[in-house]
Image (cartoon, rainbow, N blue to C red):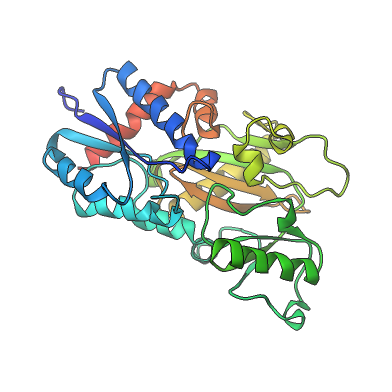
Amino acid sequence: MDTLKPRVVVLHNRPDPTDPADVGVLREAADVETALRSAGWEAERVSVHRGNLFETLTGLTERRDKSVVFNLCEGLDGSSRFESTVAGLLELFTIRFTGSPSLTLAHALDKRVAKAMLASAGVAAPSSQVFRQVPRRAVLENLTFPCVVKPLREDASIGVTRASYVTDPDQLRQQVGEVIERHGQPALVEVYLRGREFNLSVTGEGKDATAMPIAEILFEGYARGEPRLVTHEAKWVEGSEADRRTTPRCPAEVDEPLAARLRSLALAAYRVLECRDYARIDVRLDARGRPQVLEVNPNPDIARSAGLARAVAASGQSYEAFVAGCVEAAWQRG
């Protein structure tokens, strides 16, 4: 790292005040800025939307040799599909930035593409189908139930509710129609896995990527046979019943053989999608105890209260060191 530290611009999307997941980016940006200042960096927060994005990036090009963007943009104007657009424009303007590149963000957002990439590399994931319209009952004859229905191109568990769990063709058809109408995109239907659920935070890049201590989601107070899902409400509505019943434990209580399999699977998924700096890989066990990748989440929430920060702390690294390390990696990439 150069003796003269570059200025860090903590870039985040202007949040939709009606969406708790979107508003969470303000807490995340504040935590990152505070950590950087504590570590001796000059930092400022900048909020962007479609109206000021080009003006903001044009201004950053004038000091590109003296600055790094800490990219916390999760989309623009409430749409997650623009997350990769912001990273792509940073690449186009040759501005150094933290986190995953635009192609990784685009591939991960489209679950069909991500699953195809994982499958081509032999990384286990639940079998699935994509529906662009409500299917006829005959189409569903050979489908294995229960299933989970979710929007094809969303993150942060948007569109995942208790109704996403379906046990027969009629429920599936109803929920597919709900996703298409409400979210304006195809529905992904994947086999429901009955086993334990884990989150694995991974940092670094390529062959130097490292898996942090494993976290497990503890589904508390669930009746036998009750579906265990981490819904949008569970993730983002603090104090809700869904939140209280899905408690993360990090480090997880797992034996070393399972831990090794989980780490290997997470690192493989991270590398296949070419994630960079940090990501969270969501994994679940099937009925036979075999781990499978549910989601690859590049650029997840890294607020101090978020899962990735908990994993970093469990590894013995300080939050400030993690945040500074992301900036240093971005600066060295040039």
